[in-house]
Image (cartoon, rainbow, N blue to C red; front, top):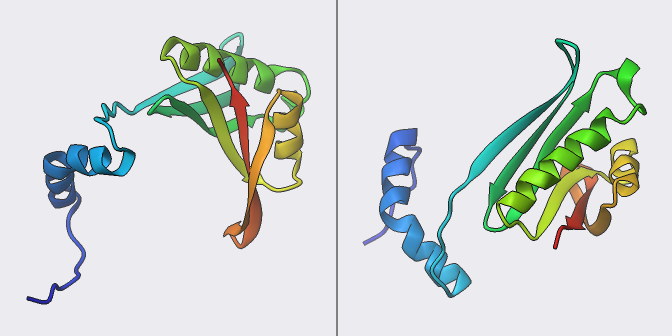
Amino acid sequence: MPVEISRVEGRDAETFLRDHEREALKTLFNFSVVWHEQRHDFAALDGKDVVGIATVRIAASLAHVEQVIVLPERRLAGAGRLLLERAAEVANYYNCHKMSALVPHHSSAQQFLERCGYKEEAVLPQHTFKLDVAAMRKFLL
């Protein structure tokens, strides 16, 4: 019987995933996977003023830095580094073995991550907005 592909509502996809995702992950990774994804947001504060934010997602022993944003006038003063250090502390608490991030290749963001101890793991050609993207990583353990 041929299948038909159509869009579904989010709750329909969630129901299917809830019922079948664990077995699919077990098949994919060849072991039982306990997948608890978490999001952690951190703020750099100057008094009550937020001068920077970092967001990290943790799942499968990996912490992925989704964003680090520091106000332009506060950059190069250490707030971004402190945000990443706090994120690494939380990642270590949850037994993550590495942190990762995706940034435009050869960008100031990549240079920042390199100064914070991250290494280029791969380059994804024309990945986001048709730009090359550097997959960065920092081992924690």
